[in-house]
Amino acid sequence: MLLCLALAAQALLVSAAVAADSTTVIRSALQNTVDCPSCLGLLTSLKPVAQSGNDALITQLTGLCIQLGAADPDVCAGVVEGAGPVLGQALRQINTTGSTAERLCDALMGVCVSKTPTAFTVKFPKPAPAHPKIFKSRGRAPFRVVHLSDVHIDRQYTPGSEANCTKPICCRDFADSPTVPTLPAGPNGNSHCDSPVPLADSMLAAIERLKPTFSIFTGDVAERAVWLVNQSDVYADLHDFNAEMASKLSAPIFPSIGLRCFPFFCRSLTSSMIGNHDTSPVNLFARTTSNTVNNSQWVFDIQSSDWERWIKGSAASQVDHHSGSYSALVSGTNLRIMAVNTQYWYKQNFWLYDSDVQRPDPNGIISFMVDQLQAAEDAGERMWIIGHIPIGGGDLSNYYNQVLQRYKNTIAGQFFGHTHGDQFQIAYSNYSDQTAHTAVSAALIVGACGNPAFKVYDIDPDTFEVMDSSVFFTNASDAHFQVNPQWSLYYSARETYGPLVGLSPREPLSPAFWHNLTEVFQTNDTEFQTYNARISRGGAVSACDATCKNTTICDLRAFRSENNCDTPTPGLSLRRRTRGDSHGSDACEGTGIAQIFSNMVSVLG
Ligand SMILES: *[C@@H]1O[C@H](CO)[C@@H](O)[C@H](O)[C@H]1NC(C)=O
Ligand SMILES: *[C@@H]1O[C@H](CO)[C@@H](O)[C@H](O)[C@H]1NC(C)=O
Ligand SMILES: *[C@@H]1O[C@H](CO)[C@@H](O)[C@H](O)[C@H]1NC(C)=O
Ligand SMILES: *[C@@H]1O[C@H](CO)[C@@H](O)[C@H](O)[C@H]1NC(C)=O
Ligand SMILES: *[C@@H]1O[C@H](CO)[C@@H](O)[C@H](O)[C@H]1NC(C)=O
Ligand SMILES: *[C@@H]1O[C@H](CO)[C@@H](O)[C@H](O)[C@H]1NC(C)=O
Ligand SMILES: *[C@@H]1O[C@H](CO)[C@@H](O)[C@H](O)[C@H]1NC(C)=O
Ligand SMILES: *[C@@H]1O[C@H](CO)[C@@H](O)[C@H](O)[C@H]1NC(C)=O
Ligand SMILES: *[C@@H]1O[C@H](CO)[C@@H](O)[C@H](O)[C@H]1NC(C)=O
Image (cartoon, rainbow, N blue to C red):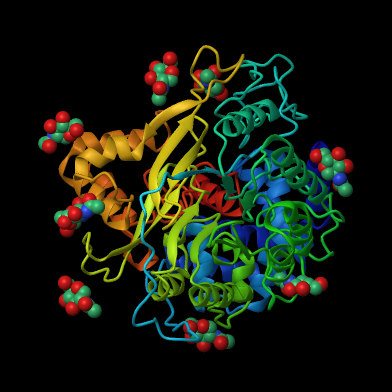
């Protein structure tokens, strides 16, 4: 880290004469960034720097980040080094005042935000059947499924190290750590840190004791020390956690691709030091149309081979050939699970801004979904969709929603992670008329931040609908937590929410149920505040006043980004997210290039 810093400083000196001018220009452009036109102006002033090479861009941005104290020097160096080449490519290839540049400004700064999606009509092989297959419950005993996500295991977590540091995550021996920690990290974790291995192990043991029929895992394995992690670290993280799940859980697991840390800032194997950026960037998930090598194939290769033990051969081969997405039948049932790689829909994947050509279906993920859903409909199967990032906030939510409406009779459940909050999102057949009657699907989101947790679903074996959703958690404030984390039931949605909406005994937790619950939240503030605290299992609860409540309920009802109520604060792209927001909260994410830009703007502003 100190090496990177020294090299960055040296590079600044060597090219000082040339760079001084552009440094002044960029600094003043950053200072002036308050709205959309000024952000486009910033991109325009960065473009000539990018044109003189990624090294120049990285040197400039790293230097400014350090100078302005936007983050610790090692964080500045690592983050800019990782994302710089991708940003550089975008700046060279796009019109910096055009519509792609506006989307880039939205991702970087929370300005130029447009809620109107580019019109695109998804094509379907067949119209919806006039008489769709009815899946009818015979009232048999439900089976149990566990949903876990966002484990963020830090294999370099060091008990006794500083837990209250100035970096995005703590509890590691950093080169600049104090010799005597002010707050020593306990063996089982701390809220400023990612998970130590023993905490993850105790969670897997708790899951095993519940004897689920199978589990779903919606991604994010690696630690958030994104400014340090390189490709070999991530390779090991993925492989180790796959091996741990395989050895500690006896039932199959249906996993999906997460985002740590490939879409962000992982250093490449070949450019682990500042000064060597001319190799193809391997950081974020490039699109098949990107002018680069097939840079995420190594992720799909590992997962394809590691997951084959659970999802079997043909699905494993899909992982390799459909950018990490697959569909697999659950053995002995006619439930099919489709895992979709949501990275190509993620605003912070800066490869999405590398061309002015509109790509409504990057890497063909939407067409893959349509093919799999049509085959499932034809075969009379039911489908669950699992993925990392909930759909409601993304650019492509409009297109995904079209698929959902077409196959609503086939899709019995949707499950996501990423926000680190216990949340849900409802889709409607008519978003101008949001009622129990028009609610067509509900996506369930599992929490990770706050007190550690996973969910247990009771599933009807005929309809594959969710009969109950229970959160299990371990209380990090509990006296035993550092000795032996105890995992227990936090609450059951059926038990606690059922009576509030008058749910009858054999009804599932249907989209109508979730809609009716949002109506209870609207009229009963006590119930709403209880929900707000449950998002994080009572850990680090953020207050939610009337405006926040209005936004939160609006967002629970918004499966399309044009319907959500997020109001970004310019220059604070990552801070605009509140805990109650299920649309891609980055509150618990690591520091990224957008955070660095936002910090630089606020220091100057
Ligand atoms: C860039 O985009 C702006 C805004 O859409 C447009 O006015 C301008 O003509 C474009 N420039 C080029 C070179 O295409
Ligand atoms: C963490 O450090 C900050 C200052 O760096 C201090 O204000 C805060 O009280 C510390 N928190 C704990 C829990 O020690
Ligand atoms: C990746 O980082 C780890 C430390 O996190 C280091 O031990 C390893 O040598 C690095 N690998 C490469 C290829 O840079
Ligand atoms: C990457 O290349 C492999 C063949 O090596 C191909 O099967 C796969 O579809 C490609 N993936 C992407 C995202 O381009
Ligand atoms: C959707 O709801 C609005 C408001 O109730 C109504 O005016 C409109 O006709 C509905 N659209 C459809 C397609 O039913
Ligand atoms: C939802 O509320 C409507 C009335 O607004 C009621 O007809 C329906 O039975 C309720 N459904 C559930 C599942 O709670
Ligand atoms: C809100 O819900 C609580 C708990 O269920 C209940 O005690 C209270 O009476 C409700 N308040 C209103 C205004 O309905
Ligand atoms: C967690 O433990 C603390 C300390 O015992 C307690 O105050 C808090 O209510 C517990 N939280 C939950 C959700 O049970
Ligand atoms: C939010 O506020 C707006 C206007 O203030 C109102 O029309 C809307 O019904 C509110 N939504 C909720 C969910 O309370």
